[in-house]
Length: 504
Image (cartoon, one colour):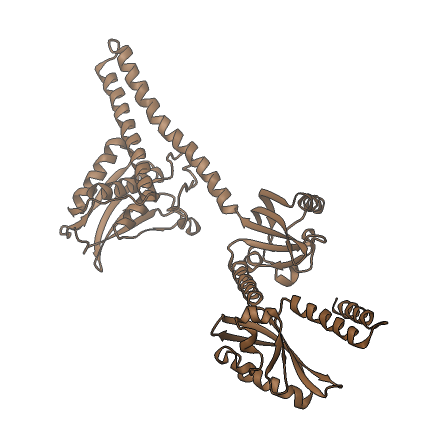
């Protein structure tokens, strides 16, 4: 473009000279050149051999807020109280005439007193007049402040994007929109799939191990290029180790530096899907656990109301007893649900007071013995046991849940024992049974939400799988810990600790 402009100007000047008086031709050429100079947006200055300003275009005067009267005849270093007195610039200008040098794109970042901080690109060269035997310096100035600012913003934006890309907790793939070749992959996806960057970069999307269905992948890629957006809620992928995972896959197309790329965001939703399934199962389980006692309660009461005259005293007592026991079961289940709801909403408030743990344990044992006569319950506490500060109703709920859990998973007629001891500033309470025991691998699961183990011989054990989770929440809010010690075939002991120094 610059060569075309030079050619055009040369042809115009040659046109002025052709067939005209030299003086006239010179005047027309000067006016032509002057017009070009005055319409230039960038400042232009002509200096003599002593670096005084001979002339400048209007852009120079407008941008640097100086008048022609003040500028012309003055050293460039003296303009506007020396704002151009820049040592490196001075050095370069002073070498141009003696050494017949020039410089291009000399960048200065300078705080000009009148116009503020600016970044300028300077170009200078020697102009020699053979006829007048004079030397001049032509100095061109380009203000690139805004451009530099934009470049810095772009660079900063790229750094921010790269940091987000590298630290994102979703897998990210960048593909060429034409070829579907992978151009970039973030560390999270490398860890998720188990393939190295080298194994992924340069491959087409359907050439990598996790995506097995080539035909479906190519079809999806075509759909993506056409619509520039595609989303899958639960796309199956396979890791390098052969593990099946479910991912949420979202892709969109956008331009980068004049070409289109595809960004694929891949989120592992395997655990979320499992949790959703567990929640669905839990809701069904709780519904069943609620409906069973309600059915017994309503059935017993309706029978009493409709057949009161035909029922014997013992039969009526039996029906009322069934209704009362079912009501207690229902109350226990609803209580556990309420405690979990409070814990989830951080509204689990304790009503702490000094309590005797032996009395609380006795209350819990008496309650469960009233409901279930199928097991032998024992309390084994030391004669002297320091009182503790705790919420008595919550401690009783913990013990009742542990006793109920032991009852469900131990043979009828077996012993269930509650005991306590002091140890290193803590009160340790345990509930042991003679059940089937728990595998080591399962012991880490039983305190998690919605977990229900089914040991051999106890497949019919009822429950919503809430008891141990509620115990964990209540123990932790008291500042204690809960754990299990168990050997398959030798029963289990559930322990929880409470601090002896807790203040009311």
